[in-house]
Image: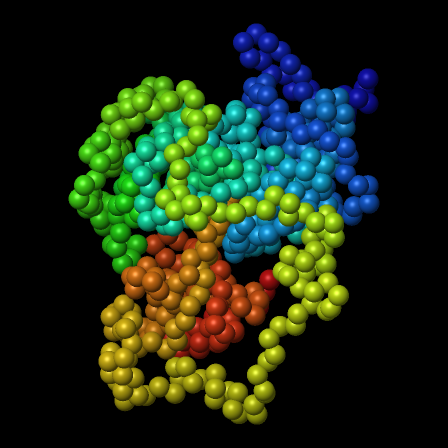
Length: 586
């Protein structure tokens, strides 16, 4: 008996005079960067996935847990199995890997199929070294904790976390696969949604936000990119990397511990949807998500967010002044609802003073005849104004030649490389010039510019380049199409890739604009601490500061080599700050 007590500690949980004992493993600091699995405070239902154990021949490290049903919060490296059976260790060898659903600076999201249950999931693969370097460890832990809470409490219209595991270099999250992608994609494809469709999805978001409030979670980055649609076109809220778990001694404001209060001034969220209180005292509340709800309803019905401008700074100014307008023939009940949600004082927003749920929002005339009690079983109004817009899905994507895991052969298959040949080599390097010519070429971006040459090129640029005014009259040194992705939100359920026109100009400035509308979307913050690093032949990382603090961006060159951008940025940085911007550490 003594040896048994040494191996296990007994956690006694009491709820409504009911006592249960849960065997708990000693803390394992190797799990999730030292995080100890969180034991649910109540006897919440456990999520179990039955199935035979995985193939024994695996070398990927995985964690173990005590025998018995495993709550999701303790699921580090396991899916819970049949009651009273030993949980099977999980690794990448338990999944077939399909297409990439999204990619970020330190994460890739894959479509995977469980080899045991034959079910599809989204698997987030996160790079540990990058997480540590970008100081995102606490964010990763917090996202896992929030997903555990939502999964254990059966959160409606939210993604569910099924399992987490790790190997020496990566962390893996297995979550719900949203078959129909982002709500934003459907808004953009259709220009706008019908009133009936917007009403239905707004109602599902209200139900999701009611549950988040009930379990003391503020999302803080609610937007159409973070709203997914499942196989039945119902809402799934995702991306809880910016979420906050709060204690509510008073009115639901963020009143976490002292260390959390010291970090409260950090910027979170996305410019077009951020609530005004986060721009002033940085103190989020449940009402912050209601502001985002108002922005989303507006965007569903118009195709654009209510607050737009050429830069984030100007967007923030508009938010604080409540400068937005409704187009002609806008639905009057929707307009009234939005006006009652987009209120500067968070305590005066519709729903903010409701004690239980958001009954005042539910009873608004916009939601007349909404089937609140049966939303999940009610077919949503069609999103597709054109039947050809309905995406085609291949449910038989697993073929006989596939093997579980993600080794080089499987990566070659996913990338479309011929299995019978060697992997495709990177683009051939350009012929090497003599050293003197190489040195001169590298200086050609900035160093050899004279004042006369600058004025000559500016005159030519003003006459012939349509982007001259967009870059505020600064001389363009280099421009080109890039795919821009940022790592502000740790791991996204399905990441969106935004194509932008990137401009390196004198100043120095790094502007980026929408190539279709010609609108300036923003500028990367350029300080003496800016750094740039190559990732692949086409992709490079940009580390910079801005209004939101430190940011890392993954930029993919669409037309040439990433090295050309890296050389140009580094040369400009040397010319202005006298030190290099290139870093080579991984």
